[in-house]
Every structure is written in structure tokens, then in C-alpha cells.
Length: 337
Image (tube, rainbow, N blue to C red):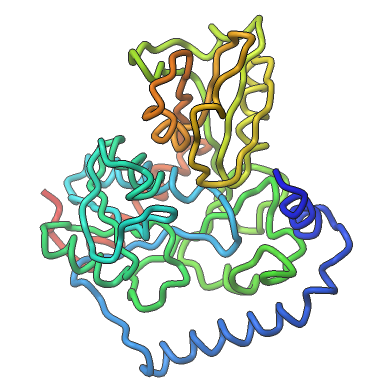
């Protein structure tokens, strides 16, 4: 992590000095965001609906909160129930996206973005496009029964039927200031407008949020596909690589699973190069699924993907799914097959 990134992290989440210096820029950001939202509400900027139910899964903070794992979890359950979901994404970090197009499991993350390729490899139909509304219309025209927007909470051109906001419970809303003085894309009151509020486990969850967590239990070799229980890696150090919004959460989860972790944090959406994952000691290298879609293309041996499973307490996950499906049925009765 660069010195600048460390300073920003300390200001946003650690109570570090410096936010006051950025207040004039925060005021400009707030004013611009508010004006843009009013323009959409007044019809001054074009909005549209693709004609099938739209569920937006997003957050109000910069960086990762766990929204993509929730999209994957929700998409798999909706597919199993016959709703034929498709995911739309901006394809952040990718070179393509001027026009809507489908992502394949073997697509290059450098072109399509790491998260869309990860979702496609997991079996979900995914399309990318910088114009979120045009991309939603594209997947609707190609047979999608429900649209899941991975991120896109602030893309008000796309009308939505259900908003799910995800919060990182380990970091919460930080200092609760908007960019660049704090991590918020929108003021904290935006949480009150969510249809559903989910919190990736931690002690800084907003009141009323449904808590969930990511469970790590196994690892898969990138070169051979061999699977091992995560416990098989205990007893010797492992190099843990994480180019995600909050690498600390991945490292801590590995330690709770009994692993001796050598930490290697990288910036979110980092594009790995050959030398980044070469270590002379021969210890295994474990990483998130999001990182694995990029590292796989390097062809190294000794690299292991650690898939994460979304877990809710008790029956909260099923109750959430029932509520989502109820909202879908109210919009598209009888469409599930």
C-alpha cells in the first residue's frame, strides 16, 4: 500500500488528522451529487427501466463492502428458483465496455474487469457496459427475467425495483464524511432509503442491518483444479495475496481458520504481474476468487484460490430470499419457470 493510500485510510477509518483540509472538496462533492440526483428526479436527465425486475446491490462507501459475493449468492438462488437472472456491471478496471456485451468464463479480466469474470466463472450470465441502463436493456432483450446490478447504487439513470445496500461491518462508514474527506459516496442518510440493509459481519454494523459473513473452508489449485480443505495448509506459513477493497478481512479470516499468514496486500482490482506472486521460500500462495481470475493467466504453479461462501445466521438468509422473491412476483407474477 502506498504512503498516500495509508494516509487516506488513516483519515477515513482511523481517526487520523487531515479530513478538515479536505472539507472544501467534500462540500463540492456533496453539492454535485445532490444536484445530479435532483436532476434525475426532475426528469432533466434521462432515466429508464428495462422492463424486467431490477435489483441493485451496492454500497455508499468507496472500496469493498462485500456486494459482489451477495450478488453471486442471490443470483445462484434466483437461478435455482427459475427466475433466469443476469448480472450487469460497469466492468471496472477493464478496457472494454463502450457497448454492452456478454462476459465469458474465459474472458480476460484486463478487458472485462475482475469481478464480472469471477461471476461468469461461477456460472452466472454477466454483461458489462459503462452505460448501466443500456446494458440492462441489452440483457433484458436477450431473455433475462431478473436483472442484478453489481454496484450501480449511484447510477440513477437505471430505475430499480429493489435496493440492497451492503456495509462492511469491520469498518462501518468510517468518519461518515463524503469523498474525499471520508469514504462515503453519498451521505449516511442514504441507508434509510434502502429496501434491505445487509452488513458484512463486524462491530460497526448500522442499526437494523441483517448480518452475514464469508466462510472460508477449502482451496482450489489454479493450475490443476485440485481441491483441499483449508485446514490442510496449517502447520506451515502461506503467502496470502489480496487485491480487494479490504485485504485485512481476508487475512483475518485465514488466521481464524488456523493458517500462519504472510500478508501481501495489493490495491483493489490490481492487475498482477509475473514477479508479484513469485516467492523463493516455496510456501503456497493463497488468494481470493477475485484475485484468482487474474493470477490464473500467469501460469504459475503453487497458487490456490480460496472461495468464500456467504453465510447468514439461522433462517435470516432464507427470509431474505423469500422477501426478494415476493417483490419479484409482485412485479412479474408467474414468470419463474
